[in-house]
Amino acid sequence: MARWEPNARERLVRAALDLFTEQGYDATTVKEIADRAGLTKTTFFRHFPDKREVLFAGQDVHARLLADAITEAPGSATPMEAVGAALDAITATFTDDRREFSARLRPVIAGHSELQERAALKRAGLARAMTDALRTRGVSEPTASLAAELGVRAFYDAFDQWADPADRQTFTELARHTLDELRASAAALG
Image (cartoon, rainbow, N blue to C red; front, side, top):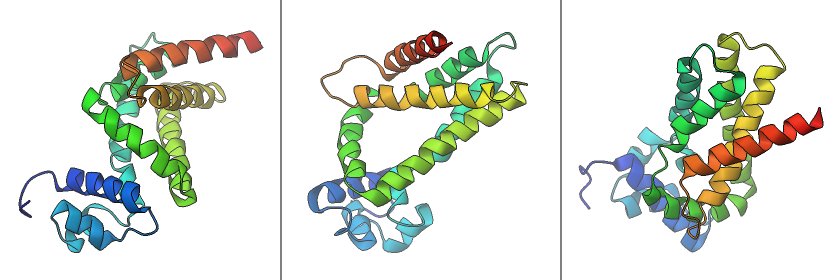
């Protein structure tokens, strides 16, 4: 594969996942990832600060999608309706061709504490993006934080189901169903 070919970032992500799966996270070097992608180590560092970050590419895009969808929700939308719109926006970007990749990603992250820590930071970042967008809409605390946390929980619970290749539902369907269940559970508490 020529170094000038497009999609260097995606090639690096896929090469990293392949190598982490084959030989483990600790045993894989940045040079090996770059070589597998047909790129240089310098190119790797143009896209990612370290090998841990390669599996979390797109976090900023995801946070922006969530925040923008909440901002663009109708003014009459409740906080949970705005969060639902955010989930629709982000899950729509997870096409079926990403399902197999996602199924392979889950055990790699689960098998290494450094990656679990980074995943927790991503999760907190997504919740913060939604909370901030809800606050901008005028939603007060703790409602903004609770709605955002329910949204993030729905996203990750649905992701786990969607990443199972045996599941044929769309990510959006799963996220909406999960959000409805979480909303009903929260209502039952009170």
